[in-house]
Structure formats: structure tokens, C-alpha cells
Amino acid sequence: MRGQLLSVLNRVRPAPIASAHCDGPCGVYDPASARIAAEAALSMTKKILALEEPAAGNAAARASYLNTLARYVAIKEEQTHLAKEELLVLWTDYFKPPHLEQYPDLHDIFWKAGKLCSSVKVEVNLDHAQELMASIQRVHEIFWATKGRDVAWYTAS
Image (cartoon, rainbow, N blue to C red; front, side, top):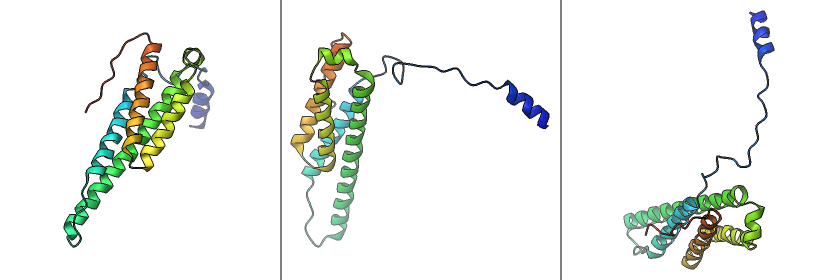
């Protein structure tokens, strides 16, 4: 048994080293996932602001209100974090130095979008949620321009 194991181990060779310029095949990047997540956060922000707190004394209505509020907040935070992750992947993996030469404000656009993600996550601020959507629209425009394509911006709502 030991001899067989040594025989197998002697035949095992390390895998050759592979390299790639990105973490996935070219063409898999798309800012749409950041838009969808940010749009969900915007929707939850609107829903939170529209919630009406029930009158005191109605425990069941109060519990239902708190449950709904908690769900909306959880979704808003989860989706905003997802938008930030999607933006970070685009910023760090897709965009390269030639893009920065073409769009010198690229780092600032992404930095501000990331900061807006943080604001939308911890606040209930409709203006910031709308600003985040506008930032992602700008990323969308730049991204598709770098690919030489005119892809229309749209939202689900």
C-alpha cells in the first residue's frame, strides 16, 4: 500500500502557472448589476419614507410596521453593498490606464459613487439614492463608450 502511494505521489506534478489580465473572460463586465442593486436601494428608500407608523396602542399594527421597516432596511443595505461591490469590480478589474487617459476623472467618479453607496446604506436619504443612480449612469456611459457601443440607459421603474 505504501509503495503504491509513493508511486502515485512521484507522478504528481505541480500545475503549470497560468496568468490572465483579468479575473474572468473578457466581456463579462457590465454595470447593469450595479444599476439593478442601486435601483433596489432607491426603491427601498422610497418605501421606507412612505411607511406610516401606526397609532400608539395597536400592538399588532406596530409589530407589522416594525417588521416591514426592518425588511426594507435590510434589503436597502444588502443591495447598496452589492452595488458597491459591483462598482469596485468594474473600477479595479475592468478599467485600465488607457481608460484613465481617456477619462481623467474616472477615479473621482468611482470614489464618489462608492461614498454614495455608503451614504445610501446608512441613511434614509432620497437625494443620495438618486445621486447614486446618476453616478452609476455616468459609469454606464463611460463603460460602454470604452467598448465602442451605444447602450441605452434604462431603469426598471
